Length: 391
Image (tube, rainbow, N blue to C red; front, side, top):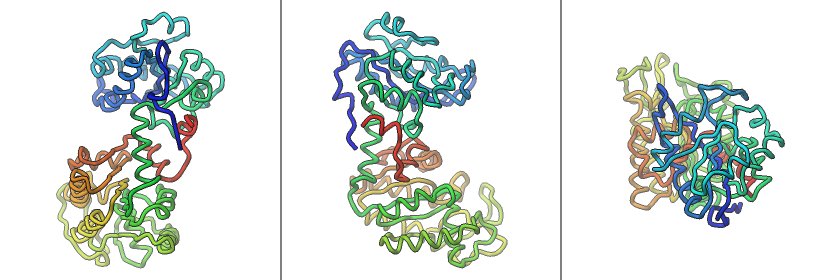
């Protein structure tokens, strides 16, 4: 799908309504991780360089459609100013007259859009009001693109619209991974439950050449094939679903890679006594908590064969050592291939970002999405309203 970027817009003298994601963690009245703020800096800087005035729209927390002082965006102003190296004007109740009074090089932050119930309802009245504050709309919040809200889709239908730098980078990365990827493509899908990733697995089977299934999800696939998984996390009621996914993969000529050896323990605790056994040798009183070294070697061999890697979810209980070994080793190997230029690697999802950071692999991946739900829905093949509205 073609979308316009900032390069396609004449912004000179324009008020540019810019939807951003600065829903950052806060403790004791201060931002504790400014990553999301830092990632919108190129968009704001470019709007100013093109003679536009950025008017920032954003949500913060879940105020449920009512003003809540604890969820005011005012708290983000110092972190925004530090990242931009310039002052930011915070406005609680904006009007077009007020916006027009600001100097051309101002950066304006409007109060939390979710302080009105009309935002999440995508109420035309709120969309009209927001549109009245600007001349051009720039969406730089891919992470909110799966929501049809007034500040993501409503406004986009009323003003000339484009994608910001972060949004454009995200869309390009995803297009290169799933739209027109370099083949072979390998996907790693891990995590606890098959149920939450059914749409994802079904979509990927038709799009990738090899599919690595890890984490608690792998146990469900092993159990479906008659393998005893002991006391492991497992969705036994999804056995038929797992078998039909394996059947579909066979028809689509997509190779499914499941663990052939496993790390087991009797308790899920840091440095618990563990051992590595074959995948079909889990004792009845034990739990599978990670993939074993042979499985990791097979996964790394798949990375060697591949040109493109898509990663969502850990391979084991990565939060606790030693059950982070498979995720760490596979991530480090993918990072090495990416750094050498032999693999395009795109990863996303909350646990995934945490796992790759923990493995020290993030910096070498080609692209890491912090978008969570929007990243997953894109991978599931769903149309994202916030992206569609830019077309």
